[in-house]
Length: 311
Length: 179
Image 1 (spheres, chains in turn yellow, red):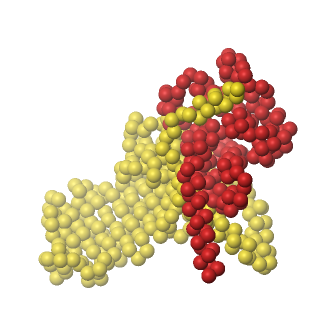
Image 2: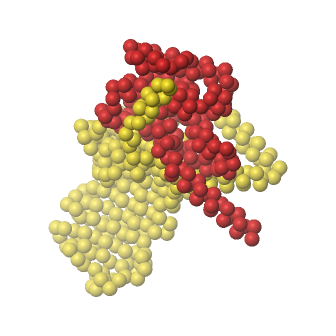
Image 3: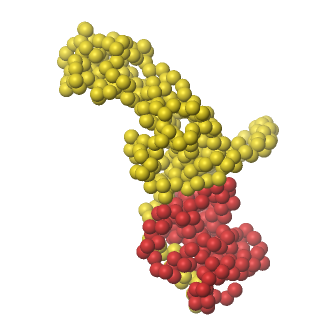
């Protein structure tokens, strides 16, 4: 009797969590690999010479470049983010970005980019705050007590810096790596839907540069209704949307032209077609750009008149 | 006409591949779990293995035994993954998800699972292929890309490591196992 087989069978019979294996992804990735190999075969002698040169260049590239070169902490980093700035940049992404989202609040900063297939997300919180692990909440800056740190696994990067692997996996994130960009301040990069997500994540992390940078917001208010609490900028091809939120739930958003205004634009503000509803005012600018202001405790028309579009 | 024919063949093959992988998914995950002892890592290994299986699907279908081909691909992916720098950097041996599941396992199962973790990957693969998949020394050697002698020595060392890790339970649990 193969008693060890019975033992192994028992050991393998542990209740399995739902499978994360994606057959369609395997077909897509496999098809790409097959296509790449066919293309490689079709390349002639001249290309082979080029390939040799490229291969030589790769061989002589220092191996350390593949390791997660954790960006150095930024000394004296602010404890509060200013919502008209971004605080990190992707030095490298696997291809052209077709859609991007940038958000900043006083407590957290987020950048999300995709080319329609792979997705990369960068999240940062200010010093002293922790980060909700699953990436499913928009307001991900939380107290450390709210985070189940059992899901984090310390890794040993070559430079000895503390890097933690966030093992929480949900549909929106395949792999995530987080580290401290300044004492007590966390940054995390996550990837999804890539052919080789682990390698991609390391390459992206390698390129991340932490640093304060102004963001060009395509409008301003001559007199803001309060302190800015959130910046939001989304770009997708020719379409874009930018917004600022202020203390007291006031907000201003402008977006690219979106066809002719519908029948709900029944009023006019300063000779422009508009819709006023529940303290929300939407206006169609002469250029086609849509403006929307919200002022719960005041007159949105008056706030709109303080808006200057710079785009 | 040739193009149409090729497309039809490709679509048929893809359908056959999807049908095969879906039907064998529980088995593939179970085998990967035995090798990895971690469901997250097991799923990663299966994902990579089925991608490679898709790339070599024509060869797999032409093989006498598709399961054997898939098993070999999966074992090699596991061993390759264990050699990678990423695997060395990221240790998920005590993953919380698996900890939660442990509560439902018997004491013997837990002991064997923990003992398997103490066995080096190649020796673990040799044990799983020889004793769980019932492969011959020759077939195991083919799957592991090594000689028959290496399989024998890896199996023997694997059993020793397993006995050592099982401690006092070893005699009771492995009484009938040669090696």
